[in-house]
Image (cartoon, rainbow, N blue to C red; front, side):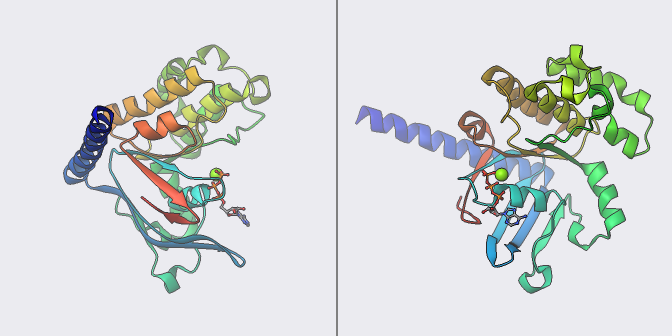
Length: 253
Ligand SMILES: Nc1ncnc2c1ncn2[C@@H]1O[C@H](COP(=O)(O)OP(=O)(O)OP(=O)(O)O)[C@@H](O)[C@H]1O
Ligand SMILES: [Mg+2]
């Protein structure tokens, strides 16, 4: 009885904490993402079966679920890298920071993506001919901004992630976990409003994974950035503001 009472109180506390936290964030800052009726087919394979999701500005949320549930597909669509199937037929609507990006033309969409969105993927795709430092500054170069103004920020992010002594290494001279952290610096350098991370701690040992989690929360507190994290890491998923569970192309909770 004592045990179940305790479990029940912990459950209520978590439930209340998350509802309070989310409603407070949304009431204060509004939505960063609003999406409804997302469908995705690959041929006859229906991978997303009508996903609706709303995420508040400054929220750190996780998406979990078994392999093949559609998590990466959803992340790519929310992150503007892929399009849902038949937007008109399903009346699909997605906004990021109130911008309905499905209506944008390619050039406008690239600009929108570069200015607002950061990505951290497990397959980190660093450019082999550039050093870690140059790779991290690429979004600045692409945006046509002055790289020298961002060097201090890049260096301090490298320091936070404990890879400052690897900045002159090329990707093939980095371990998988180091390359992953360079990709994190690259995702954050532009101070995007929203960061999409697909298995960001997949290549990291538990100490570095923990440091990266902490960094996500610190950044949210400091800059009010929004984080959408797909993860199999139970600790990370349970420590986010809200956890969404995906199964067979739908969000269960
Ligand atoms: N380009 C593609 N063409 C055909 N099928 C695809 C394509 N991309 C993904 N799929 C299929 O869509 C389903 C969902 O894939 P997705 O990558 O979104 O899963 P996931 O939830 O991220 O899984 P994991 O945890 O293994 O990364 C899978 O069954 C996959 O085989
Ligand atoms: Mg995936």
